[in-house]
Amino acid sequence: MAATESAEMNKAEYWDKRYQSADNQPPREWHIGYDELEDYLKEDVYPHWPADAKIMHPGAGSSHLPLEMRKKGGYTNITCAEFSPSVIAQMRPLDPEIEWVECDVRDMKDFASDSYDVVFDKACFEAFCAWGPKHLLKEIPDVIVSDSRLYSQEAYRVLKPGGWFIIISVFEPRYVHHLLKCEGTNWEDVHPPKALTESGWMQTRAYCLRKPQPDAAVAHM
Image (cartoon, rainbow, N blue to C red; front, side):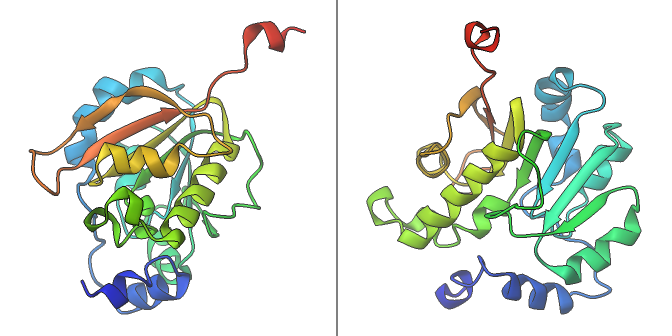
């Protein structure tokens, strides 16, 4: 991918144009799909979620992950937050029970604070970091730092205390934590980064962060 193209991936116009050109084509999975994630979900995730968990998929694009999470995981309260109206129009008819909301996940003003149990990101974070791994941490462009941290702060805000922020990404742990564990958040690690594919420069990992519960002593004051 050319640098000029990757630099546009944090803009709604880029994705809307891309999805318009993909009319009548099969949905695309970035990295891995539900089948490759299923063992991780069944072993490390689903046992800890309530049956009525309220789940947001930011930047869902044309992924079938939300559909499969409803169909195979049994989770019915799912929202996809996406800033491309073209892909929303393509995906909404595939499962009318999923709520699609057009928004920029760096500014989710239409979503109340403390309202979701889970924010599940598969490659949305990476759209803000398109120049990503080729940079050392000290060389990350300011726009990547700003976009990523605005997104992290918004994910933190919309999650309920105790809510989970799952990020499926090919980026290395030092990179993910540097960008997402930022001012305005207090993320805890639910588990260490978990490899989902074989090792290599494009190894996919699951990162699982949690918004802390309020301190019990403070909560009862």
